[in-house]
Image (tube, rainbow, N blue to C red; front, side, top):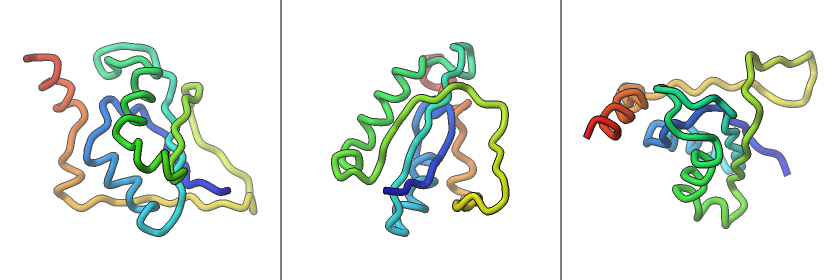
Length: 113
């Protein structure tokens, strides 16, 4: 079974993230969400295990249908490929209402209450 892979910090999961994966799900594709194993700091208030559990909770129905998998991967510095590797690199450009969603703003609202 093939998957469309998305790599991110997902700190926290929000509607912009959902829009992004929906671009492939709506095409009938399966999605692999890779949670980068980043150190905890102001931009990353959650540890990777908590992020994975949060995403799995939000996408439980899709995980149960085996349309989505969530894994933790080591932090990365780049994504590289050679020619003819058998997969595509696809950029999804969100509409303005989605691109305005800011995880930084969401984190500030969550932790400054």
